[in-house]
Image 1 (cartoon, rainbow, N blue to C red):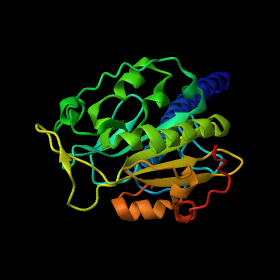
Image 2: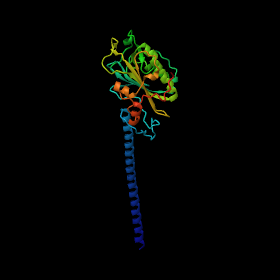
Image 3: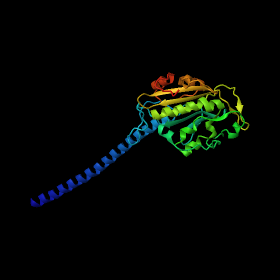
Image 4: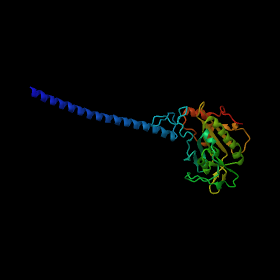
Amino acid sequence: MARRSKSTSYLTLLILAAAVVAYVLNLGGFKDKVNAVTAQEQEQTSGSSREVIDKINSGGKTSSSTSSNEGESTNLSSEGVNTASLEIPKSKYDVVRHSHYALGYDEKHEQAAWVAYKLDARETRGRAEREDDFRPDPAVTTGSANPSDYSRSGHDRGHLAPAADFKFSKKAMSESFFMSNMSPQKPRFNRGIWKELEEQVRDWVKKDKAYYVVTGPVLSGSRYRKIGKKNRVSVPKYYYKILLDMEEPEVKAIAFLMENKGSEKPLSSFVVSIDRIEQMTGIDFFPNLPDDLEKKLEASASTRNWDFDK
C-alpha cells in the first residue's frame, strides 16, 4: 500500500508540473495577442491623425481638431481650428515656399498671384536691414522675372510681402527681394497709399499679436500693359491685401482692394469683402476654415474692431 501511495504522489506532481508549464506557455501566447492588437490600434490611430493632417495641408476643409502622436493638440486656435498653413489659399498655381512666406507664381504674368505668410507681433521689432538685393527666384522652376525687366519702365519693383515685415531675420529679409515677390507698381502708389497700408498692418499686429496675411495683384482678364524685354511682366490695375486675426477676444478679417495709382483717400475707403476679391481673382482664401466661419468672415466688409490710424 505504501509503495502504491508513493507512486501516486509522483504521478500527481508530474501532472501538476505539466499543467503549470502549459499555463505559462498559454499565458505568453495571450500576451503576444494583446501586444499585436495594441500595436494595430496604435497604427490605426496614427494613420487617422496623418489623414487629417494631409487633408488640412492639401486644402481640404475640416473643423476637426488634430492631435499629434503624443496625444497633444497642435496648432489649434481658440475656435478649435487647425491653423497649420492656414494662410495658404486654394488656387491653380504651384506653391513656392521660402523660409517665412509662400507664393503662387503666375508664369503668364511673371509675378505671384498671391503671397502668404503669418505675421507675428514679435517679428516687427527686428533689426535686420534691407540690402535691396533684387534677384530672380531660384525656386520658381519656370524662371521668374529679372530686375532688369523693370529698368526704365516707369514702375517700381513693388513688394507684395513687404521687406519691413521680415526685419526679425536677415535671411527672411533677403528672400523678400526675390523677383517673384515683386509686381510693377506706380511710384506714387508704391511709396504712398500702399506703403501706408503696410505700416497700418504692422501697427495693428502689435496690438492683436498675429495675422495671417495674403497679398497679391488682380490678374483676371487678358489685356495688360507689359514691361520687360527678356520677360514680359504684366502691369496690374488693382492689388489686394487680406488679413485674418484668429486671436481672442474676437476672430475677425478685413480685405483691401486698391487701384495701382496714387491716392489721398483714407485706408478705410478701400475696404471690401473677401468674397469680392475671390470673385475677381478666382482664388479661394482661407479654405481650411470651418464653412460657417469662412462664410461669415468673407461676406463682411465691416471696419468694426479695426482702429485706423487715419
